[in-house]
Image (cartoon, rainbow, N blue to C red; front, side, top):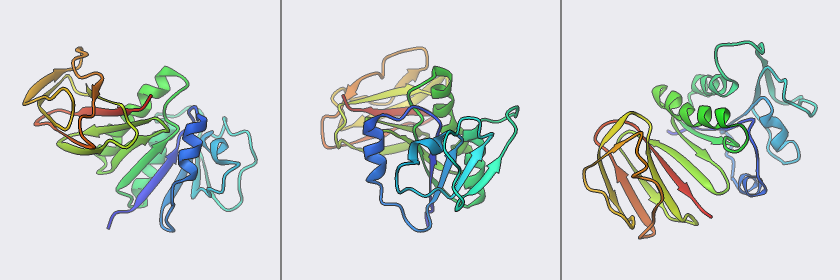
Length: 211
């Protein structure tokens, strides 16, 4: 049975992000983790974290008494986000939503995107969830709901992605090859309410964006 985890990263949170996160119907067995300053984003909500993890140098509000507090030194070989992913793996979670991962410093944004591969290698199905953006990392195929999204971009994570085939998108691909240095897969659009993207080899970022 699938067990969900949510990690609030210490990124930039827009009003659209916070509205979306307040609508999430958390389950009793969900694992909710704040990566350091990610706790500040939910301080004024009713979201109760399972744990707050990191060096805690970015937390501005008092720490809760009903959450596990795990402190790490500032100088370490992993980011707070990676440590949080290790934590939810130990909790036997196999589905992960990373929140607040976009916006802010570019190096943090890139690191959060590649954290999807870190999670994948641990057997965790992860995605980045923001108010106007969804980021998935695909190794075989994915089905997408149009919802409110306007664009779908296909961006190779590995040097080359082969056998890229799409259904339900305005500009179809059939057994295409995408290279990381090319912008060929940027800004496709939904043609139907549902779409599918499949690949044969490599890893592909699939990013849904609404204006």
